[in-house]
Length: 596
Image 1 (tube, rainbow, N blue to C red):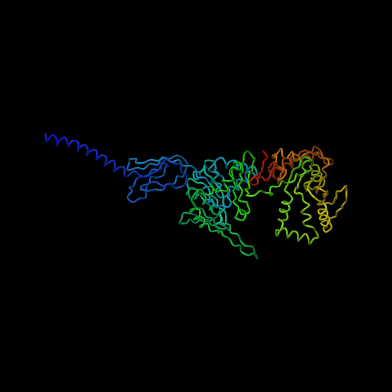
Image 2: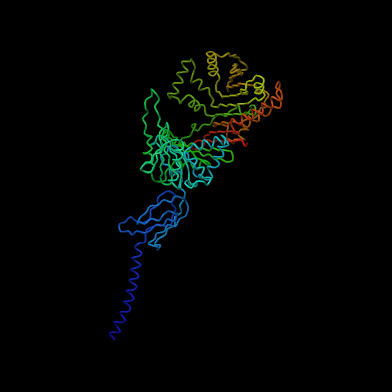
């Protein structure tokens, strides 16, 4: 019975020993499980930590799943060069003891630019952005000129190869840009790369092919000695290749050297870039404020104004440039902390309502008179205003009276006269342009303006005839053999130079411009500008006959003129508009390139 009891105890004890041994073995194996962290999203080029740094942590073999060699260590840091999804495994021999899935996203170019950058021009993603930009530029300047200029610009050859799929060193999902920071006197270019060393060698090769010398530094950067210019430095940092291009400002002879807080030291810039952490420029308060106010584009421009302008209520400006099929659209916003124009409305320009139709150029400014006077002559009490008053006083003019006579609107229209051009070209052998210029400025009083004009004409070498006609003072003269008439009425000053426009039909030019460029353009509180080369081409091609000009010569001159314009510029029209909006002011622009 006793022996039976012992046997009954030995069996459970033996079983427990086996179980304990198994648990101990399992426990010992568990102690080598490394720390991989949870499944997560990281940025390409940014080092990711795996494992532990505590003393005694066992070594394992790390397989990052991206084709790079495995590493054996207790703690590793690894940067993924390309975006994608990777399974990171920790191996104890051939046994997998840990796994984490990492989704690697492209590192945004703005996160690679320091947050205190004063100016940044950037393409957020090469793929889908560079191609239309290149196409537009080739149409604008011609394929040969564009190709030559792009080949001479750092990084651009690699960028173009990348979007074509011919380069594995550059990441087409990442960005490209230029920026300036207060601590560096110059410009910095940056480009997202997947193979940093290959990209570095490609840049060095570009410079060496042009006869420049490259010197590799111990820290991995390359200093490139340029002929007749400050040396540039190329270096890598967290998935981006940087090119620091110093631009030391030389003091002019006789002028004192200006104190500066910046330096052309590219090595100092490299340390500065390597040392900054966080989101960079991507979460700048100014960018956060303006990002939703501009349209999406292929390339962006961000300017953070200096402290003086910020203190005056102007923190900065953001603009986008969108390009598609020969058309570039600019949309920008200037942030202000106080209402522009002091919240006042500019006057309605009258000339555009009833003017000769078909201008090839138009410009209009409508600003409240006090703000216009401050813009032209300086703010009341300012040194610039006092200087203007002193100069005019010496000339015997009432400066404040003249300033007070301005209503705040100025309009300019330019016309081309094709028949006059062909007559002058073919009969007089003089190919200078022929046409007319109309200018009108609103007035509150005419007397100061008439006095200033009479004094200017009397003291100059002008041959001027003046007359008084129905409360309108007119001055007639000739400039460059073209007639010039200046008329001053109680509410406006008008100028007409060049050919007579009486034969042109008249209409609401302002309405036509607004239909074409936007409902609020060329109106109160706007500054608008338009150049219409398409209209100029149409005007040159329109005459079927010109009195005194043989038909054969006219046809040849029209063909020559059209070819010359095509060679001179391919754009169809350009437009720019600046207008006050809530929270600041908007800048809109457009360039349309002619389809050949």
